[in-house]
Length: 260
Image (cartoon, rainbow, N blue to C red):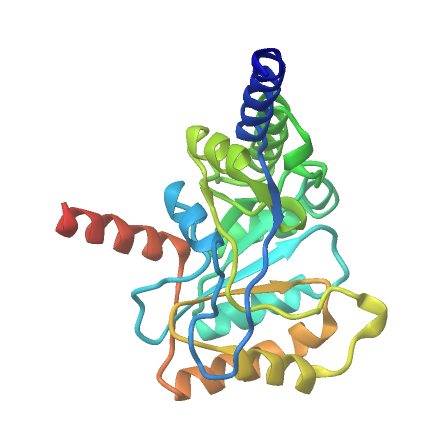
Protein backbone atom coordinates (compact mmCIF):
# COMPACT_ATOMS: atom_id res chain seq x y z
CA UNK A 1 0.00 0.00 0.00
CA UNK A 2 2.82 2.43 0.77
CA UNK A 3 4.33 1.88 -2.65
CA UNK A 4 1.03 2.74 -4.32
CA UNK A 5 0.89 6.07 -2.49
CA UNK A 6 4.45 6.89 -3.55
CA UNK A 7 3.56 6.26 -7.21
CA UNK A 8 0.20 8.05 -7.26
CA UNK A 9 1.20 11.24 -5.41
CA UNK A 10 3.65 12.55 -8.04
CA UNK A 11 1.02 11.93 -10.72
CA UNK A 12 -1.55 14.00 -8.79
CA UNK A 13 0.95 16.82 -8.27
CA UNK A 14 1.81 16.79 -11.97
CA UNK A 15 -1.86 17.00 -12.92
CA UNK A 16 -2.44 19.94 -10.59
CA UNK A 17 0.59 21.77 -11.93
CA UNK A 18 -0.42 21.21 -15.53
CA UNK A 19 -4.02 22.40 -15.06
CA UNK A 20 -2.80 25.55 -13.29
CA UNK A 21 -0.72 26.46 -16.35
CA UNK A 22 -3.63 26.27 -18.80
CA UNK A 23 -4.63 29.62 -20.32
CA UNK A 24 -8.05 29.34 -21.89
CA UNK A 25 -8.87 31.23 -25.09
CA UNK A 26 -12.24 32.85 -25.70
CA UNK A 27 -14.28 34.32 -28.53
CA UNK A 28 -16.16 37.45 -27.48
CA UNK A 29 -19.90 37.02 -27.21
CA UNK A 30 -22.92 38.08 -25.19
CA UNK A 31 -26.58 37.25 -24.69
CA UNK A 32 -28.67 39.49 -26.91
CA UNK A 33 -31.85 41.09 -25.65
CA UNK A 34 -34.43 43.52 -27.02
CA UNK A 35 -35.18 45.13 -23.67
CA UNK A 36 -32.84 48.11 -24.14
CA UNK A 37 -30.53 46.72 -21.47
CA UNK A 38 -26.80 46.01 -21.43
CA UNK A 39 -26.47 42.36 -22.50
CA UNK A 40 -25.21 39.67 -20.16
CA UNK A 41 -21.63 38.56 -20.76
CA UNK A 42 -21.28 35.99 -17.97
CA UNK A 43 -17.76 35.27 -16.75
CA UNK A 44 -16.31 37.60 -19.38
CA UNK A 45 -17.35 40.58 -17.26
CA UNK A 46 -14.99 39.77 -14.40
CA UNK A 47 -12.15 38.85 -16.75
CA UNK A 48 -12.39 42.17 -18.60
CA UNK A 49 -12.70 44.14 -15.37
CA UNK A 50 -9.47 42.61 -14.11
CA UNK A 51 -7.56 44.18 -17.02
CA UNK A 52 -9.58 47.42 -17.39
CA UNK A 53 -11.06 46.27 -20.71
CA UNK A 54 -14.50 47.53 -21.76
CA UNK A 55 -17.51 46.33 -23.75
CA UNK A 56 -20.04 48.99 -22.67
CA UNK A 57 -20.38 52.01 -20.44
CA UNK A 58 -21.90 50.28 -17.44
CA UNK A 59 -22.80 53.57 -15.73
CA UNK A 60 -24.20 55.42 -18.72
CA UNK A 61 -27.44 57.19 -19.26
CA UNK A 62 -28.49 57.43 -22.90
CA UNK A 63 -24.99 57.54 -24.33
CA UNK A 64 -23.65 55.53 -27.27
CA UNK A 65 -20.09 54.91 -28.44
CA UNK A 66 -19.86 54.35 -32.18
CA UNK A 67 -17.04 52.14 -33.47
CA UNK A 68 -16.18 50.73 -36.88
CA UNK A 69 -13.87 47.89 -37.91
CA UNK A 70 -11.96 48.55 -41.13
CA UNK A 71 -10.16 45.57 -42.63
CA UNK A 72 -10.45 46.67 -46.24
CA UNK A 73 -12.22 49.34 -48.24
CA UNK A 74 -15.44 48.66 -50.14
CA UNK A 75 -16.28 52.23 -51.13
CA UNK A 76 -18.63 53.24 -48.30
CA UNK A 77 -16.30 54.84 -45.75
CA UNK A 78 -16.36 58.28 -47.35
CA UNK A 79 -20.17 58.26 -47.22
CA UNK A 80 -20.02 57.22 -43.55
CA UNK A 81 -17.55 60.00 -42.76
CA UNK A 82 -19.77 62.54 -44.51
CA UNK A 83 -22.73 61.49 -42.35
CA UNK A 84 -20.70 61.63 -39.13
CA UNK A 85 -19.47 65.10 -40.04
CA UNK A 86 -22.95 66.36 -40.86
CA UNK A 87 -24.42 64.97 -37.64
CA UNK A 88 -21.37 65.93 -35.54
CA UNK A 89 -20.96 62.40 -34.22
CA UNK A 90 -17.55 61.08 -33.06
CA UNK A 91 -16.41 57.55 -33.83
CA UNK A 92 -13.47 55.21 -33.43
CA UNK A 93 -12.18 53.34 -36.48
CA UNK A 94 -10.25 50.14 -35.75
CA UNK A 95 -8.03 49.63 -38.77
CA UNK A 96 -5.66 46.93 -40.01
CA UNK A 97 -2.38 47.26 -41.86
CA UNK A 98 -4.05 46.34 -45.14
CA UNK A 99 -6.54 49.15 -44.70
CA UNK A 100 -3.89 51.74 -43.90
CA UNK A 101 -1.80 50.63 -46.87
CA UNK A 102 -4.65 50.70 -49.39
CA UNK A 103 -6.70 53.65 -48.07
CA UNK A 104 -4.24 56.08 -46.43
CA UNK A 105 -6.25 59.13 -47.50
CA UNK A 106 -9.31 57.86 -45.62
CA UNK A 107 -7.27 57.18 -42.47
CA UNK A 108 -5.92 60.71 -42.72
CA UNK A 109 -9.43 62.11 -43.12
CA UNK A 110 -10.69 60.16 -40.09
CA UNK A 111 -8.10 61.89 -37.94
CA UNK A 112 -8.64 65.32 -39.50
CA UNK A 113 -12.38 64.97 -38.90
CA UNK A 114 -11.69 64.44 -35.21
CA UNK A 115 -12.23 60.70 -35.01
CA UNK A 116 -10.02 58.20 -33.18
CA UNK A 117 -7.98 55.48 -34.88
CA UNK A 118 -7.89 52.21 -32.96
CA UNK A 119 -5.52 49.27 -33.36
CA UNK A 120 -6.99 46.19 -35.04
CA UNK A 121 -3.49 44.72 -35.63
CA UNK A 122 -1.43 44.82 -38.80
CA UNK A 123 -2.11 41.36 -40.26
CA UNK A 124 -5.34 40.47 -38.37
CA UNK A 125 -3.99 37.32 -36.65
CA UNK A 126 -5.34 35.42 -33.66
CA UNK A 127 -3.42 36.93 -30.74
CA UNK A 128 -4.13 33.91 -28.52
CA UNK A 129 -1.82 31.76 -30.68
CA UNK A 130 1.08 34.22 -30.44
CA UNK A 131 3.83 35.14 -28.02
CA UNK A 132 3.97 38.47 -26.19
CA UNK A 133 6.76 39.64 -28.50
CA UNK A 134 4.77 38.74 -31.60
CA UNK A 135 1.66 40.56 -30.37
CA UNK A 136 3.71 43.68 -29.59
CA UNK A 137 5.21 43.61 -33.08
CA UNK A 138 1.73 43.47 -34.65
CA UNK A 139 0.54 46.44 -32.62
CA UNK A 140 3.68 48.49 -33.18
CA UNK A 141 3.57 47.90 -36.95
CA UNK A 142 0.01 49.19 -37.14
CA UNK A 143 0.73 52.19 -34.93
CA UNK A 144 3.73 53.14 -37.07
CA UNK A 145 1.71 52.74 -40.26
CA UNK A 146 -1.04 55.06 -38.96
CA UNK A 147 1.54 57.65 -37.84
CA UNK A 148 2.99 57.77 -41.36
CA UNK A 149 -0.31 58.71 -43.02
CA UNK A 150 -1.98 60.84 -40.34
CA UNK A 151 -1.34 63.15 -37.39
CA UNK A 152 -2.26 60.47 -34.85
CA UNK A 153 1.07 59.17 -33.65
CA UNK A 154 -0.10 56.95 -30.80
CA UNK A 155 -2.94 54.45 -30.53
CA UNK A 156 -4.66 53.77 -27.23
CA UNK A 157 -7.55 51.45 -28.04
CA UNK A 158 -7.31 47.86 -29.21
CA UNK A 159 -9.92 45.60 -30.74
CA UNK A 160 -8.56 42.06 -31.03
CA UNK A 161 -8.87 40.42 -34.44
CA UNK A 162 -11.82 38.01 -34.64
CA UNK A 163 -12.77 39.01 -31.09
CA UNK A 164 -10.49 36.30 -29.69
CA UNK A 165 -8.68 36.85 -26.41
CA UNK A 166 -7.41 35.27 -23.21
CA UNK A 167 -5.98 36.54 -19.95
CA UNK A 168 -2.49 36.69 -21.41
CA UNK A 169 -3.48 38.89 -24.35
CA UNK A 170 -5.51 41.17 -22.10
CA UNK A 171 -2.61 41.46 -19.67
CA UNK A 172 -0.03 42.08 -22.40
CA UNK A 173 -2.11 44.75 -24.11
CA UNK A 174 -2.57 46.54 -20.79
CA UNK A 175 1.19 46.46 -20.23
CA UNK A 176 1.68 47.94 -23.71
CA UNK A 177 -0.61 50.83 -22.76
CA UNK A 178 -3.71 49.67 -24.63
CA UNK A 179 -7.32 49.41 -23.55
CA UNK A 180 -9.20 46.45 -25.02
CA UNK A 181 -12.52 47.59 -26.51
CA UNK A 182 -15.13 44.91 -27.20
CA UNK A 183 -18.79 45.68 -27.93
CA UNK A 184 -22.33 45.26 -26.62
CA UNK A 185 -24.23 45.82 -29.85
CA UNK A 186 -23.47 44.20 -33.19
CA UNK A 187 -24.98 42.04 -35.89
CA UNK A 188 -23.87 40.10 -38.96
CA UNK A 189 -23.10 43.02 -41.27
CA UNK A 190 -19.75 42.15 -42.83
CA UNK A 191 -20.83 39.77 -45.61
CA UNK A 192 -20.73 42.07 -48.62
CA UNK A 193 -22.57 39.63 -50.90
CA UNK A 194 -25.44 39.17 -48.45
CA UNK A 195 -26.59 42.71 -47.74
CA UNK A 196 -30.29 42.96 -46.92
CA UNK A 197 -31.08 46.66 -47.28
CA UNK A 198 -30.80 49.64 -44.95
CA UNK A 199 -33.95 48.68 -43.02
CA UNK A 200 -32.30 45.47 -41.83
CA UNK A 201 -29.33 47.35 -40.35
CA UNK A 202 -31.63 50.00 -38.87
CA UNK A 203 -33.88 47.43 -37.20
CA UNK A 204 -30.96 45.40 -35.82
CA UNK A 205 -29.47 48.47 -34.16
CA UNK A 206 -32.71 49.91 -32.80
CA UNK A 207 -33.83 46.54 -31.44
CA UNK A 208 -30.59 46.01 -29.49
CA UNK A 209 -29.76 49.60 -28.52
CA UNK A 210 -29.28 50.38 -24.84
CA UNK A 211 -27.72 53.10 -22.67
CA UNK A 212 -23.94 52.82 -22.70
CA UNK A 213 -23.77 50.73 -25.86
CA UNK A 214 -20.47 50.29 -27.66
CA UNK A 215 -21.78 49.73 -31.17
CA UNK A 216 -19.68 47.72 -33.61
CA UNK A 217 -20.26 48.25 -37.33
CA UNK A 218 -18.21 47.30 -40.39
CA UNK A 219 -17.61 49.94 -43.06
CA UNK A 220 -17.75 47.35 -45.85
CA UNK A 221 -21.51 47.15 -45.37
CA UNK A 222 -23.69 49.06 -47.83
CA UNK A 223 -26.61 48.53 -45.44
CA UNK A 224 -24.73 50.37 -42.70
CA UNK A 225 -23.79 53.26 -44.96
CA UNK A 226 -27.41 53.71 -46.06
CA UNK A 227 -28.86 53.29 -42.56
CA UNK A 228 -26.40 55.34 -40.52
CA UNK A 229 -27.97 58.77 -40.92
CA UNK A 230 -31.42 57.36 -40.17
CA UNK A 231 -30.08 55.58 -37.07
CA UNK A 232 -28.36 58.69 -35.74
CA UNK A 233 -31.36 60.95 -36.29
CA UNK A 234 -33.74 58.40 -34.73
CA UNK A 235 -31.59 57.85 -31.65
CA UNK A 236 -31.07 61.56 -31.11
CA UNK A 237 -34.85 61.97 -31.12
CA UNK A 238 -35.02 59.19 -28.53
CA UNK A 239 -32.74 61.20 -26.26
CA UNK A 240 -29.45 59.43 -27.00
CA UNK A 241 -26.16 61.30 -27.39
CA UNK A 242 -23.03 60.03 -29.12
CA UNK A 243 -19.73 60.08 -27.22
CA UNK A 244 -16.16 59.09 -28.01
CA UNK A 245 -14.11 56.40 -26.31
CA UNK A 246 -12.00 59.19 -24.82
CA UNK A 247 -15.14 60.40 -23.03
CA UNK A 248 -15.66 56.90 -21.66
CA UNK A 249 -12.09 56.71 -20.39
CA UNK A 250 -12.38 60.09 -18.67
CA UNK A 251 -15.57 58.93 -16.98
CA UNK A 252 -13.91 55.73 -15.76
CA UNK A 253 -10.94 57.64 -14.34
CA UNK A 254 -13.31 60.01 -12.54
CA UNK A 255 -15.29 57.11 -11.09
CA UNK A 256 -12.10 55.46 -9.85
CA UNK A 257 -11.05 58.70 -8.15
CA UNK A 258 -14.42 58.91 -6.42
CA UNK A 259 -14.25 55.27 -5.26
CA UNK A 260 -10.71 55.46 -3.96
